[in-house]
Amino acid sequence: MTQKIDLNSDLGEGYGAWQMGDDPAMLEIVSSANVACGFHAGDPLTILATLRAAAARGVAVGAHVSYPDRVGFGRRPMDVTSDELTADVIYQIGALQGLCAAAGTRVSYVKPHGALYNTIAQDARQAAAVIAGIKAVDPSLVLMGLAGAPVLDQARAAGLATVAEAFGDRAYTPDGQLVSRRVAGAVLHDADLVAARMARLATEGRIEAIDGSVLHLAADSICVHGDSPGAVEMARRIRAALVAAGVAITPFAGKAA
Image (cartoon, rainbow, N blue to C red; front, side, top):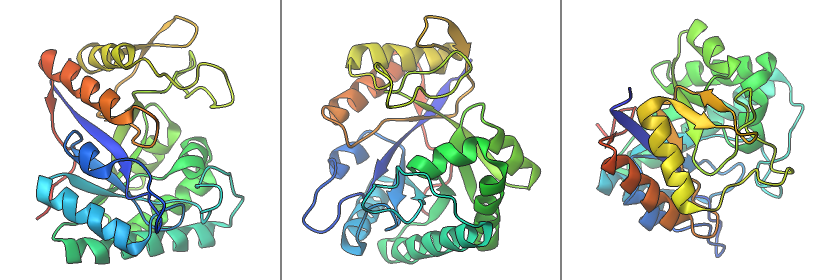
């Protein structure tokens, strides 16, 4: 039975005058922040402000690496070469490391974003390219990936530490995959329902699939999306439900050194 769990959210995704989500509010709730690195979202000033706020609150920072796809917000699959993808990962982590140094924090893990996250969950070639990029920069970085996905075994075999992630506001298929956003019911909007689901996951390791069957899911971190309507309130309710169930909210990776 899990007695502690991490809460993470995708942050730093504004761009210039365009605001995405409420980063300061989310940073009061989560224990880890997946910060955009400029490829799908985020400009240097926005990213730096988010990192400074995370450092001030003791929130762990992860590099939210992506395909180079600002127009599609990183949600469009790309058939890139392995060498290109490895270089893109190295570049993004390095950029965030520089901004972290200026903000008084550090990158302690990597969570791929959007289409890249979904692709490497099953695609061994692209997964290997991402893993190679992480190892080239810092082999002590932790890779965050979908709970139960082959990429986690692949990363561990390559020598990386991993953390398994579940999604608070997403429906699951009976085999443990995320239901496609194109399918009705893929995104959950009832904050009380989501909070109850996450409390059960954290304490029992179980979650109900979209067909009503019950999945056994071992997760060390729960993602609470910050860019949807009512996201902050949903995150607050998830945290409150976890605390009420006796679950401690704590980052899986190190905070600022």
